[in-house]
Image (cartoon, rainbow, N blue to C red; front, side, top):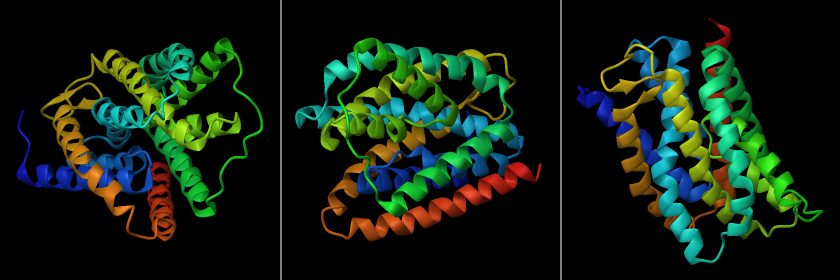
Length: 271
């Protein structure tokens, strides 16, 4: 598994930045990781469509590592609603598998890049508005929760996201307190990542090796370096959040995300 020193340095810097911003702003790292990693892979000769898919799959696999420490922290604070996790997890697993093992392999990389650019732009605009969903009702029954979970798992599997961009608004809309919605969403991130990653491995098993150390859509050197760096710097971001104006930083970060989204969409449309 050969990997150059320059790539190691770039991946460490990316992982550190993603982990710090995730701890600081409570955002999913995929919004920043996928565009940057797809660019790094494309610069090393990976075809543009495949580089997007590898970035999405590798970003999702990172959540397998990062979600564990996050869930433990939220659980210690009593912020995880485990009955909701049990109700939504079966649908999430099915949706993640359907996306990772089915639709992900069928869709073209350029289409996924455009879809991801729209997701990043939507998240950035929400961040700029800083508008919280208005809670209006109670959670539906377990079967309906599982159905919602299937949709969240499917969308997350296509985008390489942990699902918080959908699960947190859904739960707060259903009158779950925001702190519990965030903690429960963190717990849902692990089954989303597990099912989607299993799907990526299955659908990409027969692909030729794009880079040394790649298995289908997963780029293992990047996975381990990014996971290590992001887990190391996330606590620093969380501590920093207590001492600075996070709202201003969120707005600046949202502008950067809009630029990233526009760049990713332009690259996809130009091919």
